Length: 88
Image 1 (tube, helix red, strand yellow):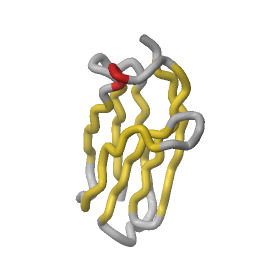
Image 2 (tube, rainbow, N blue to C red):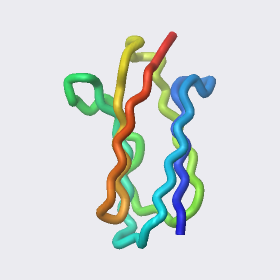
Image 3 (cartoon, rainbow, N blue to C red):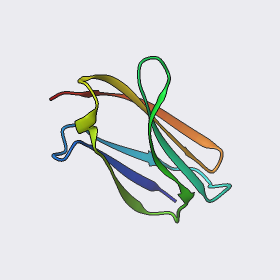
């Protein structure tokens, strides 16, 4: 089973990251958060039970300064963290 999540930054897909988790899923709760360089949560994009499959989440970065950010996806006891650059 695979779960693909695409994170679109801003209104025009400046940074697209596709994540694939290919392991047995242990629980339905999914969280997706965006952090700044100091580790502060700047956006809580998803916090709900989700079915396996493709999902699209839009991060509107228009109120954030350009810079380096991180997102963390947690699903079924697994987690993935990635870095992205927001440019304006």
